[in-house]
Structure formats: C-alpha cells, structure tokens
Image 1 (tube, helix red, strand yellow):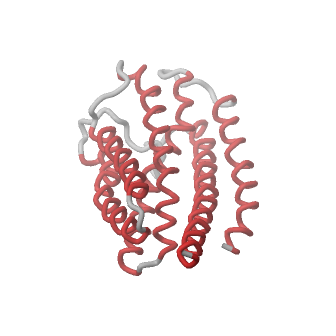
Image 2 (cartoon, rainbow, N blue to C red; image 1 turned 120 degrees about the vertical axis):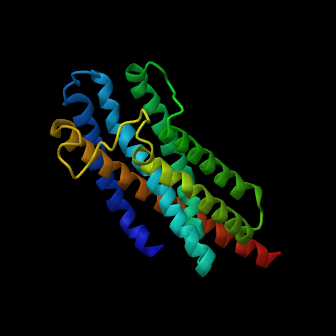
Image 3 (cartoon, rainbow, N blue to C red; image 1 turned 90 degrees about the vertical axis):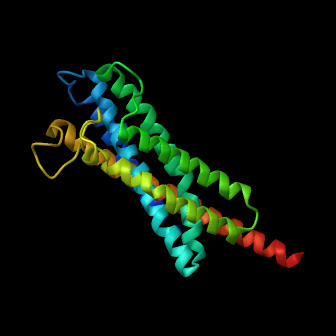
Length: 228
C-alpha cells in the first residue's frame, strides 16, 4: 500500500503525458491509408486495447495460479481488480474491430477463429466478475474464480495465436513485429507504440487503484466480522 501510494501520482502523470500525445499524434498528425482511408486510425485504440485484453487475462492467470498454490490474498485481489479493466478493454477492442473491419470485410462480424476466441474470452471475463459477485465467502470465491480463469486462459491463448493456427482466417497478423517487412509503416508504427505504452500505464494505474480498494474492503469486512 505504501509503495503503490507513492507510485500512483507519478504513474498517473506519466500516463497522461504518454497517452494524450499518442492519440493526438495518431489521429491528427498521421496520413490516411491508401486503401482504408481515415478508418486506419482506429488502430491507435484497437491494437492497444486488444493487446491489453489478452495480456490482462494472462496476468489474471498468473495471479490466480499464485492464489491456488500459495494462498496469497493480494494476488487473488489483484486478479479481481484487473478483471473489470480487462473486460472493458476487450469490449472496446471488439467494437473498434467491428468498425475497422466493416469497410474491409463488408460486414460488422465474421466467425473468424481469432474473433470468436476473443469473444469467448470476453464472456469468461464477464463470468469471472459475476462469480466473484455471486459468492459471499471471499476465499471460496477466490478459489472458484481462479479455476474459471485457468479454464478461460485457453481462449486468451487462441486469441493471441489464432492467426498462426488458422491461416484461412480473415483477421490480419500482428500489427507490430520484429520483422520490418511485417509491421505497419513507421508513420503509423511510432505513435502506435507510444499509444500501447500509454494504455499499458493506464492499466497499471487502474490496477493499483482497484487493488488498493479491494484490500481496504477486505480489511473493513475483517473488522466488521470481529465486531460481530
């Protein structure tokens, strides 16, 4: 609590100083794409949120595993705190992906392997949040949600690597790659990297705030139980 309390003001300022310039740079100071026109600028929201949606689930997988093995309460609370943020990122990625894909594919949705696994991952996010809310006993809720998270991680993996598993899918490959021939042009790549960093910092800030809140709520429940 002391460490995150000290870091939060600095991380918040760094988030603003990174994310705001990245979005302004991307939306107002990059050219339209030759084929996709101005629609391509959705990349500055879609790619970072899709990246976070998958990686937040992996973070929840790790913290859930730590809870099941070590019974470390902060790890369970961190997973609980991250879930709503991950669900929102997934929803934004689904919506922006539909808006971005419609002009290219001629439809708002296709049952592409990557899109389908991404949608199922979103359902697991919602199920995880609902299960926490449905079970009153904290440790039991942590056990059940951790198991659910481990099961759902299959679809997080598929969301990340479906393009490699099913080459016939409509969804494009990674926008960022170590291979200069595969990633987007530098004029889009540079603000995109900055946007990803900004969205990641935003997640860290929200994670710290929500985890601190969960710890305080747990302390309040413990005090109330003692008084009762």
